[in-house]
Length: 317
Image (cartoon, rainbow, N blue to C red; front, side, top):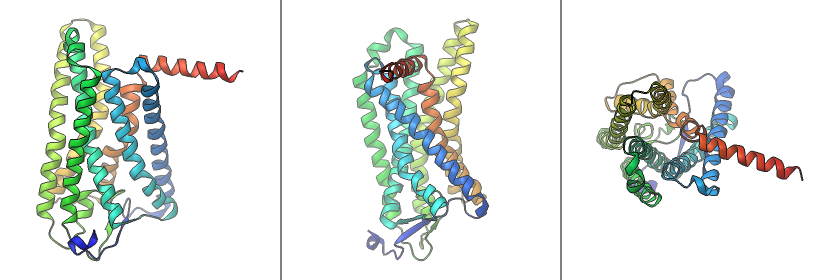
């Protein structure tokens, strides 16, 4: 693979937070370890519950299940390596492994945007057109749409790494990030990567701004619909639900779009701030979304209580 673009670099080194004093290494590694475990168990609980409990086989939970699987894959393919870098000093990835990781980073990152968009559209139909919900939305349709999104996102991932593989790398191999993604790797190329960055910027904007536009529109209509009901209880419930949802959505989209924009404009932010923003929009939504979108819903809470009580009663014997 390296021979295709005449690269001399055989491996890349993940620097994590560049320039961060070593005294903070333990704090960073423990933080990533906790984030990974919270995300792992929260998303696993969601996936297992949705697989085993037939009454949860509903369109909304099918969508959430796809989001949880995507986040599980992303975190498992990225976090163990950066944890190993801070715990054991092992931050190296082979040339091939770096680009494989890059594919999944952009594949699953794009997928998350479209799954969250589908979730917003599902809630829009459920709240604004409740009488037509079951005629418009069903498990089969949602499964097909999710499959299309998985395929589309995979094509985006392949397009991104194809741009990266065309770049030659000689000498410099230290990636200022916690995982291999296009921009931190492309800047290491011995060739001007402006054209590749522009292509990546257009892909990123179309992959994230389009879903965000649908999400914003859906929530505006939802809020208007609930407010028009004139009931204070409905308004309070809508405000609480939309606020928590927008917290996750905002954490995912706003830092991401900010990073893509200043990278395209070639502005030079503080390197540690850059990595922090990337980690903020990448990992934080992965452990907050299953809690906010799924585990705090009444139906899931009742199911968890039943499973917990069933386990306790079985363990007594």
